[in-house]
Image (cartoon, rainbow, N blue to C red; front, side, top):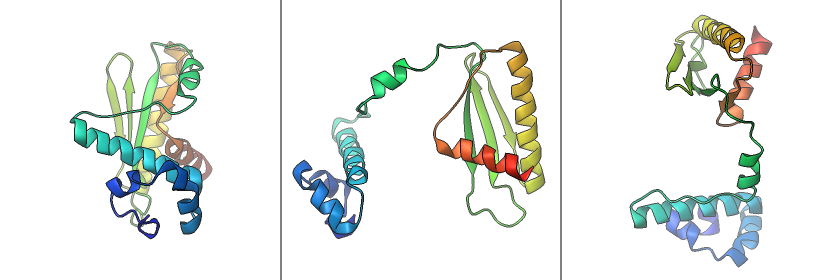
Length: 157
């Protein structure tokens, strides 16, 4: 971004929308990436200026939200915490945490690779048992990281 003349978030916001394509090309960045980064900087500047969190729905957000399935009492919200460059023999995914619709929180911690494998197995057993009680439950997660971590776990088990 510095190569595009943006050393601060205010500098990024100051790029006129009509120049984004040219600036992105000049630094080898996808135009969509620079537009997304500019929007993020704009919202951060607004947050600073207004003293409250600024937000903006992305195009298609309303339709995406409308396409989500209805709530189920068994739904869980999953988050993984990990260290992509974990030391040898350490857990890469050191925390599996879930929050449920009834306000309960469950966690599985790992400090070693063996702990990590056991944490994944214990989490899956918990989910299996929960699905018996709530057959319509869904697991919600924040991004691709969780899905990729579970794929890695499945391949290494």
